[in-house]
Length: 225
Ligand code: ADP
Ligand code: MG
Image 1 (cartoon, rainbow, N blue to C red):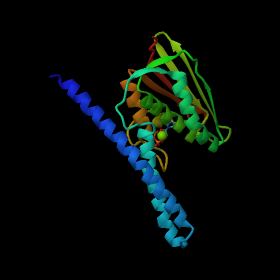
Image 2 (image 1 turned 45 degrees about the vertical axis):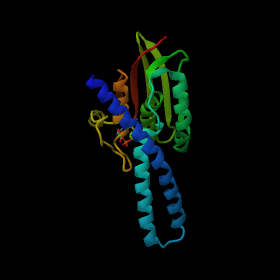
Image 3 (image 1 turned 45 degrees about the horizontal axis):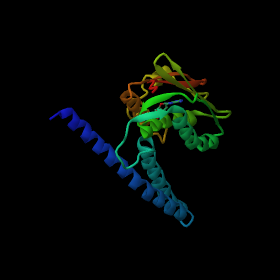
Image 4 (image 1 turned 60 degrees about the vertical axis):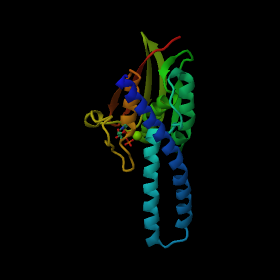
């Protein structure tokens, strides 16, 4: 009996389990958050400090789930032919409110004919984590441009922002687990994106300049039927 098959079966059981757990844990976190928020109005300033700390810890837990399992569904993951335009439209719809909250805009131009092979939830998660970083890097007049095209047998996607940018030192640490410059960062978002894109036989590259902005270039093998 093939041990590789064994291994991949085990892996998909683990990811199915993780997806169910995330699904189940998200709700009680939200409910607890609501109750705590309600309590903040009834306590003294001294006591409020503890409630605020509890809220921050809850948010930390939610952020970790967001970085890993935004789209996870408690079912086995399937690999299919994906319409890049459709997948990214879905991601844009989810990220738009967050961008607007930061006073930023997302402009997206994806041709309709691009196809890649993979798992829909995973692909969207990979993009969410990159776009979320772009949004979090924006200040006033923030803009994120997303465009894609086919080049030889690859589908190339650019995600460019005019946010705070990174130094050369920060750039080399991207994708390393727990590397974060944010007080509330998980440092896990890009690690997840790198892993997903690697599994799809693709690559992800970053260009950045401090004070100017950042550009992520994602290459995936084209899958035209
Ligand atoms: P987190 O967002 O939780 O900090 P990530 O793995 O998503 O963790 O990102 C790691 C770090 O990479 C960020 O903390 C930030 O310093 C840097 N980074 C990633 N993308 C960008 C970007 N578009 N602009 C500026 N910095 C970025
Ligand atoms: Mg992040």
